[in-house]
Image 1 (cartoon, one colour):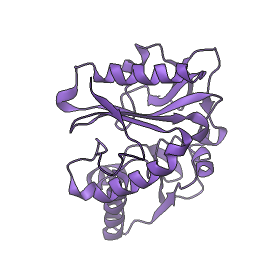
Image 2: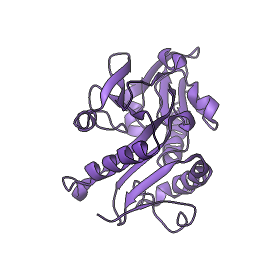
Image 3: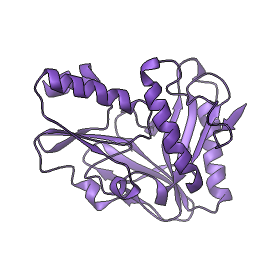
Length: 246
């Protein structure tokens, strides 16, 4: 299988898999590449199939991962995605096994990932991970779970602030980072919808590791709150937002 890792040497000419065909996401691709360039010095890994397709895994040392998860000596998986015609060909297995081998080579304590009891868009599939020995080690509410593959018996956990799942404001509030290239366009769609429908919108940009570790809810790169309560990690467009508000 022909996989490559995106590095400082090839990032300008390589595509980012999940946003390779839609022009409306080109700003997001630019922002994501700028974000990645800064993360590479922190041992961040973006590995993909060397073809024009959505087949990749992205992970980083948990201590440097922009998520409200804490633990020692773990790798955190942001995203594992195999899409469309590439499904069923063993690519997901190969990518996950690569990350596991990498963790062992670095003498890590294990790997972890945020997922959900019920399959949720923009989170990795729990059922697939369980096949490789991942186990639930923490949870928030009835749906969101932290899975870990531990090599030494230690386990990571959600940060205490993530368990709040509430904020002080009733306004539609979105915490967002630039780790996902879909986010800038989602922000524009949400802004337009809220302007046209007279909805007060608060945007909280997560632009430091410290902010990411202290988001008051589940967060992989996006978290939506409304009427003080956490609602979803689902990226919003106008259609999904209308349904949520209604």
